Amino acid sequence: MESSVRTAERRSLAACTELHRSHHPGLLRYAGILTGGDHWRAEDLVAEARLRVWRRPAAG
Image 1 (cartoon, rainbow, N blue to C red):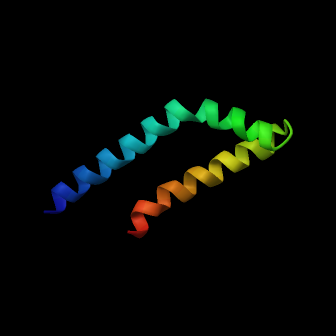
Image 2 (spheres, rainbow, N blue to C red):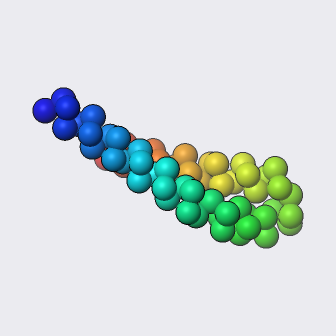
């Protein structure tokens, strides 16, 4: 049972990593528009959004 949980966690992490890689540039461009071109604020927005999405499944 514990092994299957670890395998599921690895798959979930791999899926999140792939999702991040494929969508990060577009999210960063959009966040740049929202922040008026402030690169650092855009990075912060994307990081915060990613953290919230990542926490959601863990919370149930």
